Image (tube, rainbow, N blue to C red):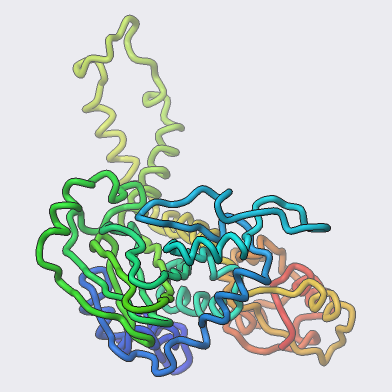
Length: 402
């Protein structure tokens, strides 16, 4: 049976973005994912230059009009206030929180680390890579770049509440990895809640200590402690954060659905006794435990899946869409015009409504077989779909030129 990471791909091939960083996808899924770190030396011979390089960093910082929070700056383990690196952009662009290349040059020369945030939203090569990686993993991802001056430690030992891939782009950086003090932390369980334990563990022998060079990849499950120090010159690395769906997320939706059911239960809505002190023996807790258990037992797993899918749609964006290109496509449609489903829509059919990251769109005028072909990724003609229906899909951002 193919691994789930292969499902839905022509021929069952693993995702190209994931294979690029982990190598053997099946082995990674079986042995490494969420369990232990993985170090891959020379995973990319070009040093990931197609995703980001030093010239791209300079362009982003000086020519793209970035604003907060797309950049933060840190020194000595502390994050600087936004005013330290932002300024108005001059005539016609007076917004005060734009990144200032003048201030950044001085800060970087003085030893500050620059953190380009949410590159999966602003830099096209990383947008494409992260969308494919998210599709391969089945979990949402984000991308930051850390630009560190020579002989500088960016942040003290800490852990993240999401898994990460570290892709070394330029320079050399010494990484020290320690075992978790709190394995697999949730989003609301940050390392700052366990400072003393983190400090003690950082004094123990590391499980990995290595120098990353351009093209190297390091995978860390959430919870693993890490710190990094630049060696000799400027270093740049990409951190791809993976916000894994967890069993706890399933439990959250189970509990939410059970509580919705209890809200319809008159006995559950009944008031506690007059004059209650909220003491344990006044709470009818055992009765509510039984009712809650019955409500949980009655939850349909498909309802849980629907709620999680709705959360998933909101956690990632569909492939970029050009409004002018879509307008031109809609205006020029004829029966021979070819179209296809927009990438990364996460689309599904519920009756005659198509649910996706672009919203809810009625599709009742399109035959079921044609819709199945569209959702399977086939290129169709406007004649297959019907001109009016195709125009609706184009204007809704569901299909693009084939």
